[in-house]
Length: 196
Image 1 (cartoon, helix red, strand yellow):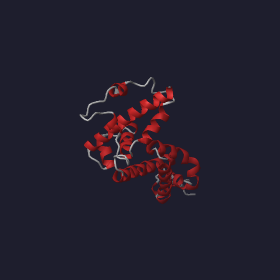
Image 2: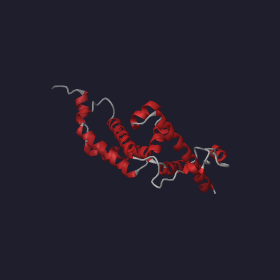
Image 3: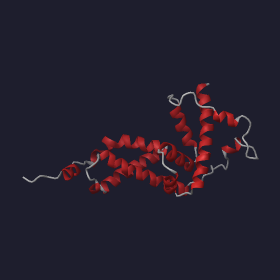
Image 4: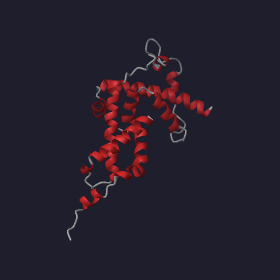
C-alpha cells in the first residue's frame, strides 16, 4: 500500500461546500470591521470563496484552511480599498465640509472646539464606545475612513498605506488629519448624546 503524502491528503480533505457554514461568519465579521459596509463585506466574502475554489490547488495544506481563506479575503479587501480610492471624491456630495464648523476663516480653532476635542473619553473600554466609533466611521468619506482604518486598526505604515490606496504621503496625511478631526467631533457629540 502506497503512502499518500500529508500535503495531498490535507488538500483532498478541503470541502468548499462547507466553507460558508464553517468560515462564513468569521470572514464576514472581519470584512465588515474593515469596510464598514454590509454589502461590500458580503461581496468580498463571496469573492473570497470564488477565488478559493478557483485556486484550490494553491492551498499547500501547511496552514489552516480558514487562515488561507483569510489571506485571500485580506487581498480582496485591499483591492476594494484601492478601487474606492480611485473612484471616490474626498469631499462630501453636498460640498460641505464639517471642518468649516471647527475653524474660522483664518484657520484658527473656533471658540471651545479645540478644548472640547482634547478632552479624553472617560473610558475607552466602555461598551458604548465601539458602536459610536462604528457609526462615526460610517459617516466619514470613504477615502478618509479607509486611511484611518488601515493606519489605526490594521496598524500599517505610511508607505504600505500609500501603496494600497495609490496616494502620496502628503495626501495620506490630509486624509488622516481630516478623519481624526471628524471622528473626534462626531464621537464627542454622540458620546454626550448617549450619556445625556
